[in-house]
Image 1: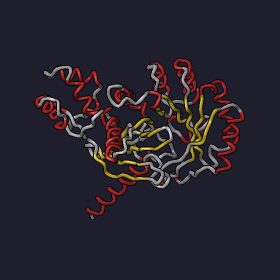
Image 2: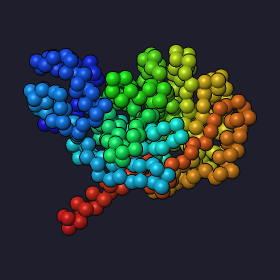
Image 3: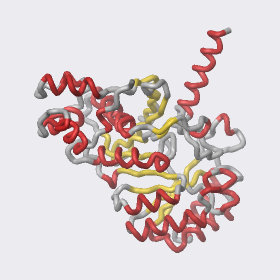
Image 4: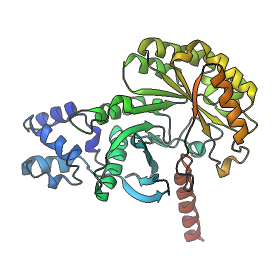
Length: 361
C-alpha cells in the first residue's frame, strides 16, 4: 500500500503524530525545518534528527512521491511540469514569472467533472481527488527546481487554478492552504494565494465563513444563464440565481475583492451585448469586483471555439471600464508551449494509449 506524503501533515498534525509514536514533541520543529527550510529530499538527510525517528518516518511516509515526466520551458520563463503520481496518474503544475514574484499554479484533482466545453482539463473525467500532500508536493518540486538553479529564488505566490475544481476537493484544498501559509514553513502569505472556483455556491458560503485572507476568483465566463449553461455544465446545478447570492454573502462576510475570470470566445460571449449584461450583473458589487478578461488558448479537441479578435477584446474592455467595472486583460504566458490547462496531460495520455495499442498489435 502506498505510504502517504509527509507534506500532507500540518505542523500540529506532525507534532501529534510524533508524540503518539513515542517521539518528543520538539522533533516536529526539526523535521519541519528540514522539509520546508532546508528542503531535503530524503529523510536520512535530516542530520540532527535521531536515527529512530528517521526510521519511523521512512516506514510511514513518503518525502518524494511525485515523479517528473516532462518539463516544458517557454521563452518567457514559464515552465510547465507534468508529474506522475504513485498510482500512475498524471497532473500538471506551472511556474510563472511576474514582476511581483514567482507564481505556481497547482492542480487539485486528477481530471475534472465540471465539464466546461472549452477547457482541456475536462477532456478526461475526474479519476480522483489529490491529497493535501500531493498538492503541497507540487510546490515543493517547483521550489526544488528553483533551488537547483542556485539563483536564490523562491515561490512567492500560488494560484489554485490547475486541473480540477478546488472546491470539489474542499477539505484537501483548505489543508494545503494551511500548510503552505504556515510561517514556520514556506510562509507564503494568504494574500499571495488565489483559489478559483467554477461556481460551487455551497462551498463559496463555506469559504466565506472561514474568514480566510486567501483571495477568491470565480470563473464566470458568461453573464446570463442560457449562455453560461451552454458553455459550463455547472450552471445547471448552480445557476446565477444561486451563485450570485453566494458571492454577495462572501463580499459581505469578508469585505475582500473578488476576481471574475472571463475567457473571451469569438462570436460566443464577446459581443457588446454580453459586456453590458456583465455590467448589469456586477453593478451592485463593482466596488469589490475585478474582471480578468482572458484571451482563449485554443484546444484541439474543442475546435468549435476560437480566440476572440483583438478589436472585440478591446471593445468589451472599454464597455466595462466606461461603466465603472475594474478590469484588465490577462498577460499571456507560455504561449509557445502547451499553454492551456490540461493540454500537456491530455497529450501524454494519448501517447501512452498509442504506445500500448502499438505494442498489442
